[in-house]
Image 1 (cartoon, rainbow, N blue to C red):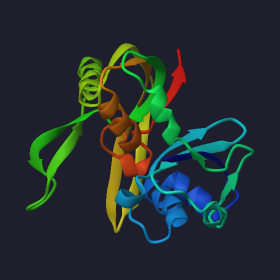
Image 2 (image 1 turned 135 degrees about the horizontal axis):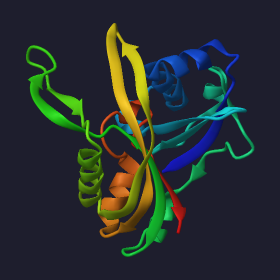
Image 3 (image 1 turned 180 degrees about the vertical axis):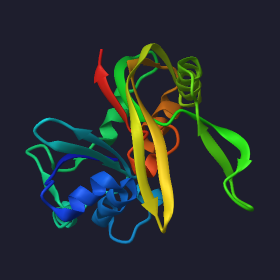
Image 4 (image 1 turned 90 degrees about the vertical axis):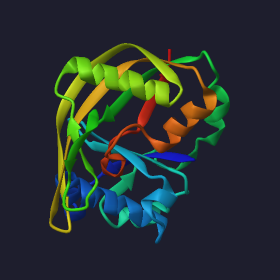
Length: 209
């Protein structure tokens, strides 16, 4: 498992397009993995737009070829080399707590189909109470409990693929989690939390308490 931090050169056309369209950002990042699919790569990422720069955190099962990303407007900062984070698994012990930050799409499946013969649609949970209950359920699913959870920001995440619109209402959570099941927690940490993982959602960021 690898993680790295990159910066975006917003003077580059591909970088600007990636910020406008989450599918294009996803496609640009996959360039670092030859012809592998997102499922094979295990790609997760998170965009942070600051006053001075735009940073992108990238996590993957496969080691990325950073030289391919330089061609589409990414540039490695001084910490930009891919870091093998698999040894972190030894630190994720039952009972240990971490501060967490998570950008995700709190949602539920609707009975309404997305199209003829399509899958069930996902709909955004409109009340804060529902959304807090959602992240608690995700914790149970992935082997952790949460305390002190708060919604920090929310915004629309948009894009398009083959003429079909992509839209997620992203919510940023902060709080404290405590690991209850080490194997399930590692699966959630590696695989991401919730829907929209190809488009910059679901990457779990941790700090020691």
